[in-house]
Length: 337
Ligand code: SF4
Image (tube, rainbow, N blue to C red):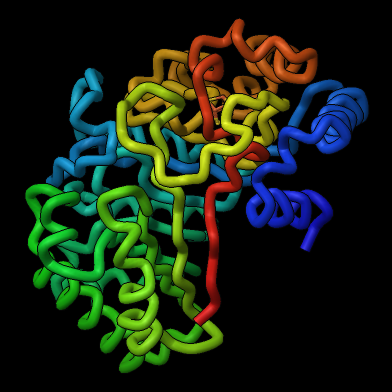
């Protein structure tokens, strides 16, 4: 585990530490050094493509219902252009999905085929599993994805359906159980399943039941259970925040700006951060620019990084009210099964 990961874990377990002046100074020093060593640039290796921003659910804690962007499926030719640019710039690791449900896109398997043809490494895909019947699971398991994350935010039907409005608990659970069965049948011991739960006031009493239920079904030593603090999308939604509040107002430079992964929205816009669900804070559009690296290390993105390193978070509307800063709120607790 890297020093950064160790610090994040330490802060996760001891959230009050973020208010400590020595800890803040160490984080600031880390990013100032990063800035000077790399002149504000980031090595870009991964890409997350929002193949669709259409969702079949209206989850209580999700920004989807607040999103004003046009809802659409990314046309295959647009997607192909993005993959071509990524491949040409040696960005080879692909994630599918951002705000929508990836499997509302009927052309999703054509998009996987195209990525493979271009030599992309299929890293991970996140889904609510509601559309993943056995036939779709069999098809998906024919692709060399390294991981699949199933977002299920409750251990009981009542809680789940109150949160994930529009989805059926039994269908989702049956689809995941069927996926696990087919994975076993096909011997895909290289594909990790992550069960993830966005935890907040409405479901936090079910965390233990969730752990027990899914540990029984998952493969020990391979799969994971991830407990996420439900985000409030950089302060843009009013969801009750599940994480403890210690240090939430403490500002330190945000690690997300130094991600090795770039996110491409369904229309080609590049947000500075994936929490910007309406992509109001973007650094440009990949179709206009014709480059991903050019945008991720372009003038605007470097300005944003510098503002953070210099402590001027309030100058960036998205970051001004954010309590999801990468260090202030480490995002996951991941438990091995
Ligand atoms: S401070 Fe918040 S909105 Fe800004 S980059 Fe970090 S996580 Fe994203």
